[in-house]
Image (cartoon, rainbow, N blue to C red):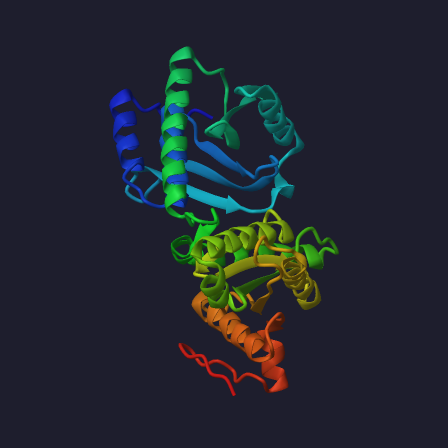
Length: 356
């Protein structure tokens, strides 16, 4: 649809200036959609993010609509939705994205009376996602140049912001990234849990309906540093990060929380599946022989990511379960609610962590 007049060049430069003033990667993605929609004169734009294997991790959909107020004035209303489950993406869109990936260039496809047009988003030489929109005609050479230029500015700026949210040693997301994105993640968890409840009522189950937050810590890490030096200690942390990445799924989130401590947010059907996932990570560390150090272990605690509980409170619960794992002899993973039922931990009051 082309109900809104395209934005001119001065407007493009202004919106680019606004976009590069943002310091949050999620808001920069929103800004890109808000920028390109008016430029192209379209009401809907989408941004798809993919992992290193090209699988869709999530996508943003930006919709603009014109409404009339009570005093007879037309006003443009904007709405942005974030989706982390790709099952609702039409097959035609999947096929279009695959064409773009294989050809490494923009492609279009006829859908009804409109064209669906897709541009690749790159980070360096790596495909990081797609920008998609619909309208009734092909892109002109002038529009092509503008779109390509804006996407290049966006990708370069996004990469800079992404670097600021990465741990320089391990490459994982850092504590700052977790803190600035935690509320948004919790909102997404609520949406996913609601989606799965509907699926369950309809006897369909496409995605895990439960999420879990775990805090993992390298056992006796100070001893490793004291005995082998900080260079070897850093190498241990890098390898632990790689092993944890391999143990968890691509869609799970992994952070270096600080020092030798890591935080993982994972999806699992139930407590048994979550326990298995965290145990798999623990076992991968225990089995690995680290150069010059030999075998080391990790301890961990985890808790269900209940939307009704503040995210920082869930971190506190997982952290208290981690300390219980340390007290139990290390090299084990403990579940917070199980420890509470067993009487090992007291129920945590808001803002406190108490052990028996």
